[in-house]
Amino acid sequence: MTMPTLAETQLKDLSAWLAASSKNGRSPLGDTIFRGSFGELATVALDDPAPDLSAAIASGCLPLLVAHDAPAAAFAAPEGQPRLDERAAHIGWLAGAAESDPLRGFPACWVVRVAEGETLRQAAVSAGADPDADRLIVGIPEARFLDLPKSQTEDT
Image 1: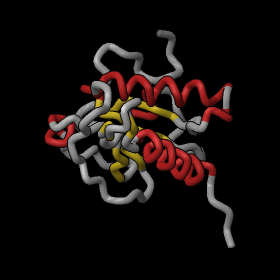
Image 2 (image 1 turned 45 degrees about the horizontal axis):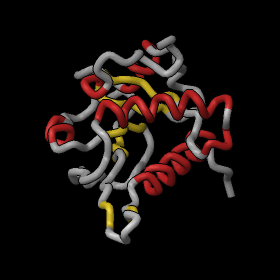
Image 3 (image 1 turned 180 degrees about the vertical axis):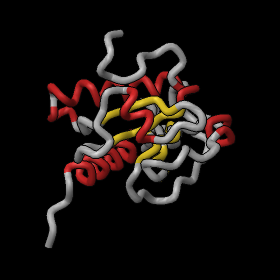
Image 4 (image 1 turned 30 degrees about the horizontal axis):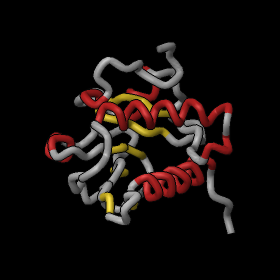
């Protein structure tokens, strides 16, 4: 039996965090608060350009590109999640914070913005990440970052 790689473990942790962050909640009066998906994993090969996700983004979905097998994304419109740019910033912030606080429950993965037509490898290299290292790289379409830093390692 082989042990999972660091990237596989980080993908599992990210999937669990997304599931927990997408659960419906309860109001003080007991009503259901519908949340929908915080973000959805989309598999893309490291050296292939990201697929056209404009329809998913237009519906309010936050696609998170990974170069590992992930369940097929439904890209259903979330009902009660913060704005896309806020969710993208939160993912980047949590990944950066996880490096010094691993008990936070979020993996210390690389979060990079991916420009249209750019591969995940190119985005990782331009953000200073080694795409061949055993660390999960999560790509977020550039349009979702607005004026945020290129990676969680840059000063804000």
